[in-house]
Image (tube, rainbow, N blue to C red):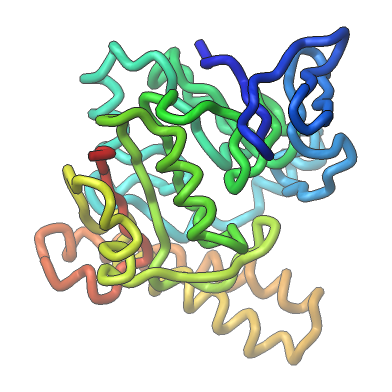
Length: 284
């Protein structure tokens, strides 16, 4: 269950009036569409097509010819499109959490991992429960048990404001699971702004207690992704269509490199060439 929503601008309580939530303080109304609150304009256009388009027969045929994903989790060597072992283990051992917000969820549904998980995104993808921006969250101070923030921070134009908002709404002792890229090609979802070293992450998370931290996606996956992009760009000669075809062709030739991560699982120096890091933190 969510705590009562507040105005994302002034944090005043919201009153339900007909099919909207109304802020008496700043006189702003937020529409409800099929019981889903929109704290952004209904016409918000930050859409990732692959998470919005219906799974038609033609799309299934096209997906059959696409190469496997370029990345795997370092610990279990399974596709990084799924969830990591660390997050699954934590949620399984914390059934008492009552409010978990998955920020930047796209269309993922993680309720099988924990029934308290609700999805927040910029757009109404399938399975989204709240349409809002991480830099203006519609929750009261100290009200959320846990926040999942996976593969999102690089896409936020104001990361410090986003982290400040997450800190504000987390309860004291609340948990933050975060996954952040280090060495990855540009990928706009819907845009791409920054990367983080270990030192950068430590500075970013200095107000939290670090419970655990490590490499999420390793050097083999990094190499697979980079080489896929490198050859697709090199041999496209600047042509967008040739580049898209090249991603498929070189994807089939390079996807297997991700399995080299089996040799990095116990190598502490793997962090020097990691594709992404993960961390579990607790608000002090």
